[in-house]
Image (cartoon, rainbow, N blue to C red; front, top):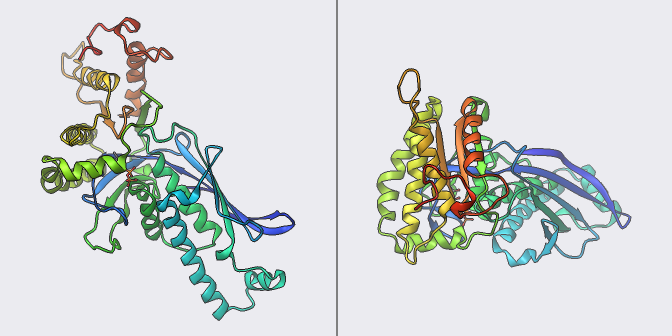
Length: 385
Ligand code: DP6
């Protein structure tokens, strides 16, 4: 998370206030979170593991202002005003941070009556900061709700910006737990690099938060490429989709009890050893199983489309190549993963990405946006089902 500044004083209607701005990156799961055991506290059925992408590319930038002259809490998303109170998750996050601010004010007023904040408040006859209304403005630099983890970066930015605004000195663990109340995957965006969300077992959720597996510097050559197949809003939101899966899929209990626990261990090993082949195979099998439980849900959920499936074939083709001179297989050099939408995230080592992009550009020329075979050269039948 990139903090432009902890918080800065502002003046609005001749009254002093504060502003804080934070930019947060998206994260893309390689072991997927899909299923809740408690939907109010957002406690998952399984642990998950993700890579936080560099925030120079996909990110959410959130600015929050607080002023004693504001008369209501307000929210603007991508430039349009939305009803902040329409989202229980948003209000839960804000309520929790306000509670922590109130706690701090109580401590301050009992221990340090001469603190600058107390003196300032007394001088201007204004209520304490925890009682001021806030204005939140949040912008994604990528399609919102198209299965590109916008809620993850969104809630991570919100909780960090509000925590800064309230001048709270809380740990990343606590921040991760508050972000989790907004959206499960958001708890992982609090950290950079490789991150595990430990599901925990306590009903209170006190042990359900993200931890760092390795920083981004651990594997600097690993790159992610996003192939935007569609920027439309997904037809089945993650929240309702995973709830139907938990209720109806017969494959799901096996995934939770037998597959995911092993995969978390294996994936951590692959990351720590920087073993791309192992990482790639696990990532692709995990994406396949996630979409298999979606298909096993009733009514079935389809997140991938024909183009998504063509991308899987293209990756498979790329990974099946044989070296012309040695005649040996070049091996697994690229991995795909799909979240709750048709867009692909490709993981590859830096020296391979360019070669793969050239292949993608050949099969999917920019700007056609068509799925018909007549628009593409399709010598390998990638677009045929
Ligand atoms: C497929 O975090 O969006 O991207 O907790 O209901 O807000 P809520 O769901 P959300 O689900 C993300 C699902 C996923 C997999 C993942 O990121 O682990």
